[in-house]
Amino acid sequence: MSQIKKFLYINRKAPYGTIYALESLEVVLIGAAFEQDVSLVFLDDGVYQLAKGQKTQGIGMKNFSPTYSALGDYEVTKIYVDKDSLEERGLTLDDLLDLKYEDEDDDWAEKDSIRLVTREQIGEIMDQHDVVLSF
Image 1 (cartoon, helix red, strand yellow):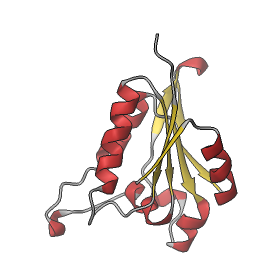
Image 2 (spheres, helix red, strand yellow; image 1 turned 90 degrees about the horizontal axis):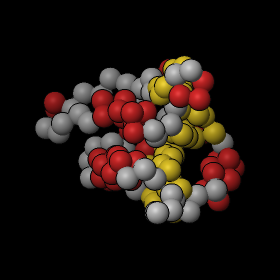
Image 3 (cartoon, one colour; image 1 turned 90 degrees about the vertical axis):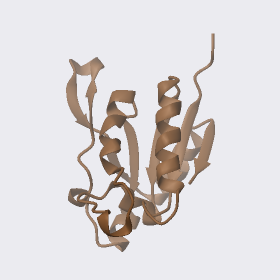
């Protein structure tokens, strides 16, 4: 029987211009498909990965942001967003995708996946995971 590991993926890069954001999302989905405990942190320019209304036609890249809505289906329900990073970029929680999951322990109630946290809390979250990968 395999042991479940707790993976934390830290996303610090803007969604386009590099491959980091898309690669992170793909690795997250693969880890979750193999039933690992997966969490994500978005800080610095990584918060833009969750921004609503991304339009990529002008840069010739496919908009992969709708894929984030599938995370709940893969039981990826812990998405942490650095509050300071949002504020520094003039963003609020309302500017981000509305990511939800259905909580089977609460009669399938729909709940928010995104949790605003401080940088101090991010350090604590990192300590709770077996593997931390930064993109």
